[in-house]
Image (cartoon, rainbow, N blue to C red; front, side, top):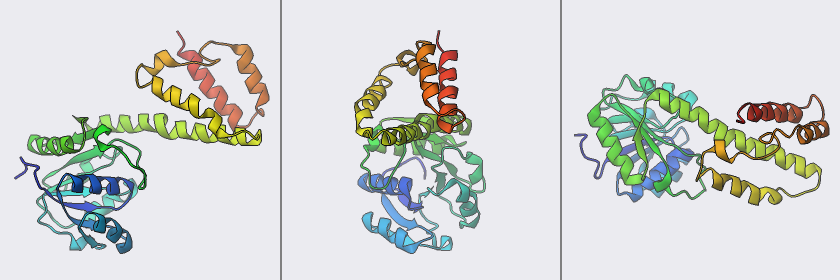
Length: 260
């Protein structure tokens, strides 16, 4: 039953950023999106109409005869959704990076199908470049999910819940924290009546470097040179005791510790 992935009947539970991208790419791969669930019937309809699926807003209305059930909801409601789902025989997976596979233990056939990317509904993303991490205690289900993943992406690997958890933390550092640094930089430039656009070439070059080499070899700046004269000048320019002063010092000290 689970050895093939051609034309799977899929129920998508969720209509947010990840769910929206998954629905479209699965539909483009000619899989049958049977239903799209959302607590808001309007949101369910918006996505369901795009992929020719039926929209539902009650979990008890889930079609129990599908091949695959993808739970793509917020982490803090995942357990509640699982508890309210009907008994199904198909494979039930979630798409969360930081949630253990064990949340799905009540389903006989279960796993994880985690597309590793930051998603927004309106952005166009080449799904073939997105890593997909797969997990299941069943080799048959792993095989099925790996096959499905390879239809969507060129980068599909098997990973445990612990590995996904570590990757999710790494993503917070590499994406969320970095973007917050952009925001702080934008605020600082705004006070000086300068445009954030000035940083665009620098940001692009920094991102380009780590595509080709380890971040440990591409670090630049006064901390990497242990240039305490410049560091102290920067710290003096920032208000002592301020958030920006504290962040600058913490990150500078962290870089210096890692300079060989």
